[in-house]
Length: 137
Image 1 (cartoon, rainbow, N blue to C red):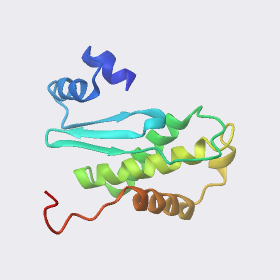
Image 2 (tube, helix red, strand yellow):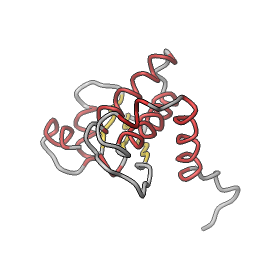
Image 3 (tube, helix red, strand yellow):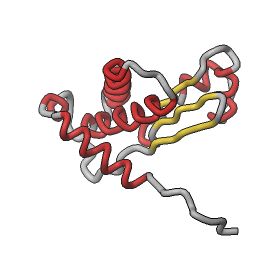
Image 4 (tube, rainbow, N blue to C red):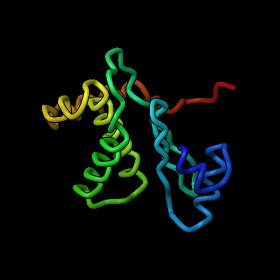
C-alpha cells in the first residue's frame, strides 16, 4: 500500500487506486500486508483478507511469496481475466500465509499443491457469502 500512496501522491487507497488507474493500467493489485490485498479495476474493488493465523512467526518475504505465487498461478492459467486475477489473489494470500509460519523458507520448502489448495478453500469458506435471495431492506 505504501507504493500505491507514493505513486499517486495521496493516502486513501481507493483514491490512490483511481489515480494510478488513470495512468493507463487496466487493473492494479495492492498488497496490504497483514490486512490482505486488493484488486482494483475500472469496475470496482475486490479485497482478500490475510489468513488469520495463531502461529505467525516472521513476515519477512511474505510479500514476495504472495507475488511469486500469484504470478505463477496466472502464468500457469494463461488467463488475465478479472476472475483469474481474483483467484490469483487467493493463491498468493495462501502461500504468503505459509511463509509467515516459519523463519526463512523452511515452511515453503515443504509446501505441496494440496496444502495450497486446502488453504485457499479455508480462506474461501471464511470470505464467501451467497447472494441474498431477496432484499433485506
